[in-house]
Every structure is written in C-alpha cells, then in structure tokens.
Image (cartoon, rainbow, N blue to C red; front, side, top):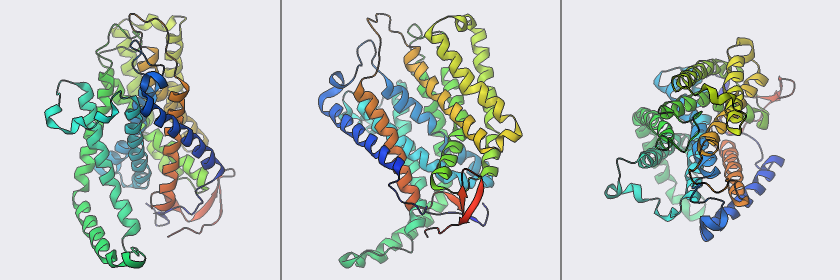
Length: 418
C-alpha cells in the first residue's frame, strides 16, 4: 500500500439521491418480508409442490453466496500467498463478503417454511452428516462468524484511542479502551488461522451448493446437469471473486469521487481470464463427454439461456481481460466485471429455475410481487449498509486527492475525515 493511500472513513453524506431511492426499495422489501413471515409462503409467493424454490434461492442465496466469494479469494491472495500489493482491496472485499453472507441468511429465513427453527443446526443432536444442506448450513454459519471476527480489527482501529462516552457512561471509557487493546493484540496473533479457516469453509460450501442439484438428474436439463456440478460451482465462484472486488471498487470510486486504484485492479484482473478459461474448458469437456452439445442447437429457452450465459458471462470478459491494455482501462474493467457478475447471476437462475423441470408440473413458476420486492429490498439494504460502514469506518484505501470520474483526472485536495 502506498504511503499516500490509507484506509480511512469517507467524508461524504449518507443520504445521496441514490441512497434515498435505495431506502425506498429497502422499505418496500422490509414490508414484504414482514408480510411473508406473518402470512406464510403460500399466501405471499408463487411457490408450489412442483416448484418448491424460486428467486429467493436462485438469487438471494445461490447468487449471493457466489458474489461474496471476493472475500475469501482476496484474503487468500493477499494474506496466504502474501501478495502484499493487494492488501488495499482486502478490507472492501471483506466488508462485501460479510454483508453478502449476512443478507444471504436474512433471505434464507424468508424461504424457509419454519424459519423459527433455523437454529437447529447449532445442536449436535440434530446434525445429519449425510445431508448436503446441513453441510452448507453449518459452513455458512461458521464462516459468517469468522467474517465478523476478521472485520472486528477494523472496528477496533476506528475506536481505539477515541472512546469518549458522555455523562455517566464516561466511567466506562478506560474499561472499553482496555478491552479494545486486549482484543487487538489477541486477534493480531490468531487472525491468520481465521483467514485460512475461512478460505477452506468457503470452498466447501461453494461447491456444496452445486451438489444440491446433483440429486435431481431427471428433473434438470442436460445442458446444466452434470455429476461435476460442485466443481463448476466452485470454479465459477472463484472466477467471480476478483471481478466482484473490481466492480465494488470502481463503483465506490465513482460514488464517492475518489481515485480508483487502477494499477492494483488491473493487476488482480489478470488472474480472472485464466480462471474463466479453466471453467470454460471443463464445461466444454463435460458437454463433450456427456454428448450434450446437441442441446445447444435447440430452439428453446434453455438453449438460449445457456448461450447467453456462456457468451456474456464467460467468453466476452475472458477475451477483454486477456488484453493488457483493456485491463488498464476503467471502462473495460468495469464492463468485464459486470459481464461476469451477470453471467453468475444467470448461471444460478439457469441451474435452479430454468434447467429445473418437475416431472408432473402443471404450470410454470414466475415470482410474485412480494418475492421480487423482498429480493430488491435485500440488495438495496446491503448497498445502504455498505455505504454507511465505509463512511464511518476505515475500509477503503484512498489517495488524498479528489477524483473526477468523467475526466480521469485529480480534482482537488481532499479533506478526509480522520
């Protein structure tokens, strides 16, 4: 990290025009969420015995977990493989992952029929080692805890030495300061163990989400059903990890008018086309081995969605990012990251919804207004919480100059909140 780049709270007001719109969407989503918890799935969703899952699983859970992969991929690169020049990206990636998994759990509660029993996996007496869902649930539960532990040093950094409670609470200032100092020393010694555990757990449950559909060979379209679906889910999550970090970093720089870390982003982007090429190669080999290529030529919604997923989500960004000059362009970096994110979203929708056909289906699934409102509300709420935390905590590393996103030039000296 450059001496001119330090993690610092961003000097910006919270309620921008965009934040106001997102607040409205979050409110609508929250009302829909409460309505679902009170009146149940049958009243608020278009789910049925034939279609037991919808966009709350495909988007809120499966896509959300994949897009949170930037946390463990960046942590592995910077802290395990000691590529220190990427440390400036680890905090935003960690925050994105922590909030991503938090909102995944919130979204999952809406999809569970008996959401009030979600604590059951905490009890060893209720464990079921043969269940893929149990493995996913327990890994997500432990990994989310690890993410909060990893993020706590950032909170300590912000408040240690600045505890100043008012009035009668002031007598606790020294006690809180001592707690923060002891916590900081302790976490410094063991944090690497949490990082390694987080990477391992992430790989386990990213692949296990694909395992969920392996048990339904006769209900899925051959373009997506494969015994190696867990491997493809893991590779796709690895492929979207760095693009998600790039997308978040560029979007933050535009939103807060700070200079993007173009050299660091271009450097981390060079790994993505290699991962995409590996994913594409395995995908093509799998189709060839299973003699499933012929399904691509069908004039069906499945073949169209498959082609769209592979072209926009894999081939186009891979071609862009293999070119060094394109990797050093903010516009091309953002475009390629956006394509990969869209490809992951489409892949998860394809696997869990488009490819899935119940044997005795009497109709088609399309999400209800409440399902769409809750999903939009969760995404909007995540963005708002992210904005709040980077404004108040030292998450984003910035150069102390304002940045004009239109002209790509420094604007003026920035007054950064300490």
